[in-house]
Amino acid sequence: MEYMSAKEAAEKWGISQRRVTLLCAENRIAGAERVGNMWLIPRTAEKPEDGRREGREKKDGRRVRPFLKWAGGKGQLLGEIGKYYPFAHGHTVKYAEPFVGGGAVLFDILDKYAPEAVYISDSNPALINAYRVIRDGAGPLMEILEEMQQAFLPLDTAGRKACYTAARDRYNALEIGEGERARLEKAALLVFLNRTCFNGLYRVNRKGFFNVPMGAYKNPLICDRENLLAVSQKLRGVKIVCGDYREAASFIDSRTFVYFDPPYRPITRTASFTAYTENQFLDAEQAQLARFAGEMGERGAKILISNSDPRNADPADDFFDTLYAAWRIERVEAARMINSDSRARGRIKELLISNF
Image (cartoon, rainbow, N blue to C red; front, side):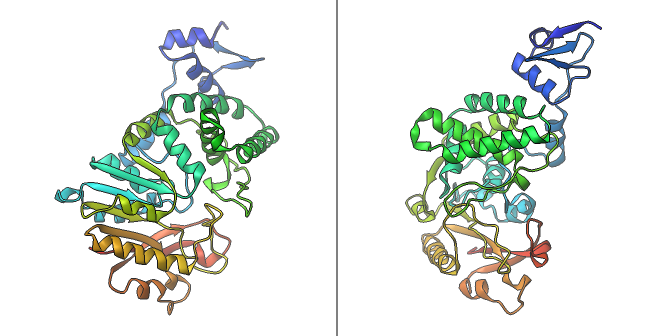
């Protein structure tokens, strides 16, 4: 059998050499063999289609989606949350999401509407850094992610664990304030770890170090080029802030739709997987958020808040019903799987709390 190099295949198929080597590493080119640092490709091989991306778009019709998997993400509730979007009426033209997390609602809104101004924030510096890096140009980030993917996928389990652990150690040691290159590398490491860690969970210990073990994914898509480019385009012009949710007060006015998705109140004492940052969000913080949301509502802003329903574990627990007694509260079904407590898994109720 005759073979061609990755460079020759790239010229033949009209794609980049880097893309060819990535397809080889993903075992998507039949008969491709790795010899040392080179890939040898049968001359009869055909250019593979990027079926995974096409399949996802056909499934839900979205053109842009979160670039990170995120525990507690609202992808499954977009149908319910979307009923509250007020943009079709004309008066509401701004959007604020002070606990942006993975951004499922953010990207759903940006995919369907074109708000005049958008504000997002989070207290997680590494997360906000990644948003900013992608907004300001996804190209350099994608180059690093493709290199990571090419290096990671061919490894056996032991090799992957060693690679993952090294990346996690580097991520924890790297400071965003060290410069532009450090910010880019930190963002790439966050995406890599998110795509390869257990359940896409972001958890830090009391020292602020990311400590999630590696997941058992056979062929993780570490560099989703098409979506990263779409995310970068949608984030242009978005104000991205690292800080407390109350800083959004300078942005919010009567023309703003605000979505708060704070760390959830645990259903049970052992059910908390909300350690997205080292700062805890207890009942006192939930009450402070309610007061702030009320103040923003007095400005005329339309407010929507998500949280867990305490009645899942204790039918007599009226914490949120009391806290938001003057608000509209809707209970919707959601699936929650990441938990050691069986009462906090499966189909449960969550709260959608609104002032309109």
